[in-house]
Length: 93
Image 1 (tube, rainbow, N blue to C red):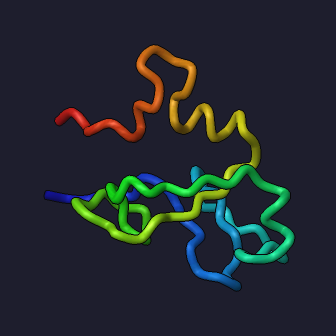
Image 2: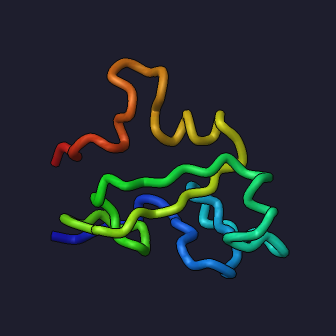
Image 3: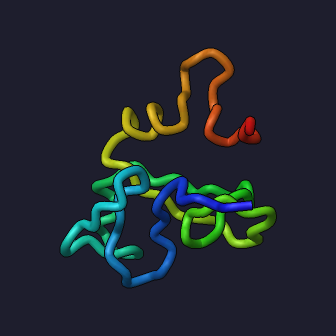
């Protein structure tokens, strides 16, 4: 089974923050710094995605995700739409 990139986590303290959706790196914004307050931050503890953001069976470590806004997070996770949280549900093949 081929696993594809689903999002871009920023897990390592001191590394540059990446946008969870686009993968864009924010210069001068480091994980663990005050710069985190400029983003909408979510911890994905489902275990469904690896530290690189690819679909996996079990990941015991949570992933830290940064979004530019709540609206970007809401769109990405399909919150507010029928069923909500579609991203987290099992994929249909």
